[in-house]
Length: 609
Image 1 (cartoon, rainbow, N blue to C red):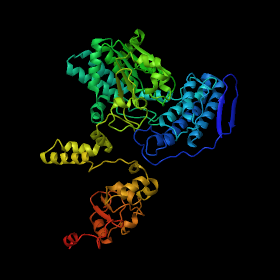
Image 2: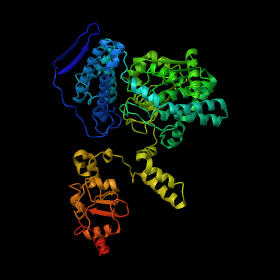
Image 3: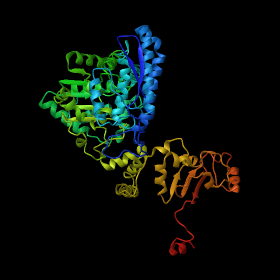
Image 4: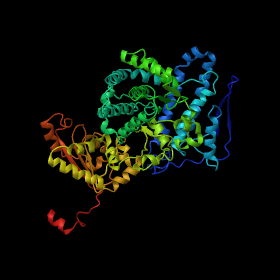
């Protein structure tokens, strides 16, 4: 059954009805693999970020919207009257239906209202013209996720009083308030930079790159990623730029500076900024725009916002103006910036635009055909700055490009003007990377390769080792992996069922070395075994290959001990299992691929004897 919820805005009734599908639904072919190269990302690949997004993140976001409406129904009734209260019930009904469609992987349907509905429905018809129905897990991630937010908007459009209601307004406002301390520091920094006005080439280059990186790291505050929860990147945005500089995978900020510098000399500088998040990020983007307007005499800065509530924290015009107004009632430094920015808007140096194309399901390579007017406007620009992950995904067509695919190639012909993409990575696609940088990034928190890099700047002996280890990585003798299973709550005895792919990989090993206390606890299922329980028994069937456990004891569980050893340790220290003063190197070879009795070479036998 396809359940449809329709609100007729001219009357006060809700019509709920059902129609029979013309064909039975076939279960989506979900595959327990990472996304293949050069195909669009999709939730049908379990090892992509799309899968947990559709399965978990979006339903949580939708639940929060429903809970928020339930919580605020009295306030809504006070503002919109009793019709508003009735609208809340109807909207909740439609959103609950949407949630059910998601978790049961129902087919998508056409939209029924909105200025952009015809565009959406053309996109839908193109997807289904061969009789292929699209659903949450079967279609492209980009289509599914944008359709989700457009369906939320439709639930409000179909109401009588709440067509313009923003269900994410409170979260964006809270995010704005939390950003004020950081903004005060950044405002003081920007005003000082402008006042100093050091026009030396290197100084201007460094100052510009610093402003650009402020804009980059502000993009970490993305409420769609955190499903609406607060994200803290620290109260000092200047320190963040220094602390995270090694995390910039591709840094072409100098090339951006050269392009802007040249353009500012030969013609009127026109900057387009396609915005992402409200709160801290949009204010930092305004600081960047102010810097370009003041220091590079930009004739126009055109900010492109979303026309409807989008991806929880995306900027609408009202959010942009709210941020300036809030700054005008904050500290002296913020007030000075807010006054300047209001003047820029009044003079037309800064303009706000809310084109519908940004909230359509199309990639940007389709813009020239789908929205030639917008493409023509962007073609007037000296440089276009695309902010954030969704813009990046649309630039790349949400395709899982090989990492070293040239960035220009991945744009697939979208080139109205020079393009800058600024994003913190929150989706499993990227292009234009050096493969060594990829290996560096694949080390979780960079600890592994950061250690090698540090050694390469230490003593001669350390430098020799670091050089060797880098060669091993480049040759593929050493590889780095960051599988999600290590940060899931399961014990390792569950791995064969919960992550058969990882278990299969480990089964290829000659020996697996597990380091540290947490790995030891997961090997033992965090069970308080009797001390003399055989180590093999405590693994409870986990034996993909011979196992070595190396740990200093910092938790009160252990197995495979001689009871005499236990008494000695207890005599030395009462809390002997908790302090890290005792250690074990334990081996389970029951799944050994070698038979030392019969198959080892005579030479090894001789050496052993």
